[in-house]
Image (cartoon, rainbow, N blue to C red; front, side, top):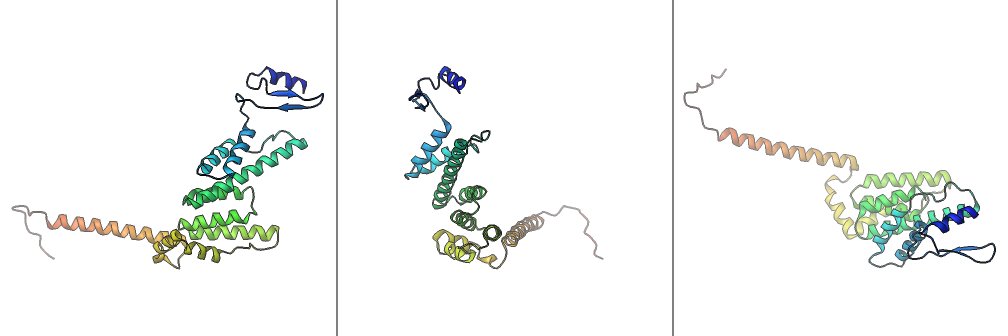
Amino acid sequence: MSTALWRLRKCNAVAGSIHRLGRDRLVFAPTQRTWVDALAFQHIVNRAGRGGAQAGHLLIRAIAIYEGAAFSDLSDDWALTERARLENTYCDALAMLAQISFESGDFRAAESLATRLTKLEPFREDIREIQMKAAMMQGNVAQAERFYREFKAILMDDLMEPPRCNIEDLTKEVRASEYGATVFDRRSLEAGYSDDVARSIRRVRRSLKQFDRRLETLSNTIVGRPKCAGAPAKQGH
């Protein structure tokens, strides 16, 4: 410990930031020249938690700072406590950013963030709902149903109880929203089909339209082609 403190005091970045309080207590008081990732991460998340127009940008910055489990090479009680605290803060940042992304209409980002968070907190139903509704808002109902089945299986295996939400109610909620109604109306031609089948139908329709356009172009070319002088007429059989 003494050697570590001696090295820290030799470092210009933290010179003057370490203060001794009594015989057995040290305090780290960072100056404007000092930047500590854990402190900056917590500070930015706290600022974002107060809301405001910049909350989303702040959370993106905070998430970029977090690089995984802190103090992974230490097993002391303080390290375990701090590691858990930082991970909880990271989860809160992901949850806030997923909600902001969903409310702003960036459903792809909302689904991605929610999916990332479910790997750390698989039992959070509020995040699962964002994940499923974001998939629906992108027109991917089958994906939302897969998310629901996955969540239900996890709860039944670990807690022996189903989710409080159900996919039917979430679908109705999405349909009732202004944007969700537009999404479902656009897909009404494929009503009753799974999402994969609906995509296949749309691909076939696009291919048929392209074929019709090529056939029409070829027909116009043949009809408009001038006859060659002196060319022998084809004999029918």
